[in-house]
Image (cartoon, rainbow over all chains, first blue to last red; front, side):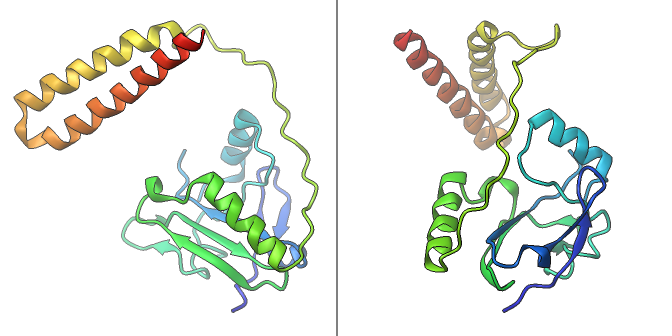
Length: 35
Length: 158
């Protein structure tokens, strides 16, 4: 099953797109935030 | 969930070697991944490993943060998945670690043992006075004892 692609903003305001990382293994850690 | 500026502060503070992404309303990734906790309005604590073709290789969703898979276990699983699929490790810049510079308000290490002794006996006293909180009080006492045991082993090693 292919996961949904997304583009999100990193801590420096740069876009980060999941599909740019094809050919790699990506570990996504979801956390609730509000540190 | 947090805004990029909050994440920037976190990355700087913890010198994290990986990007921390922001999905404030959960619309772009959290909901499409079916990880939105509607009642609480936050993401469910989860680990998802995505393979080289964009396929989902592993998913662990926790009820709360304490039941997240341990780091060594995750690293082992990811290594095994990478080997199976012959994925080469990607170079990642190592975190830059600066000399610790605790503020004047920081808790000194030699205050930890008396502090946890206090926690232990406060927990015991609490458990006796408030039977309805006995379980929590015992958990807190055990936690304090674990710290004290670790501190004592460390002292013995010198």
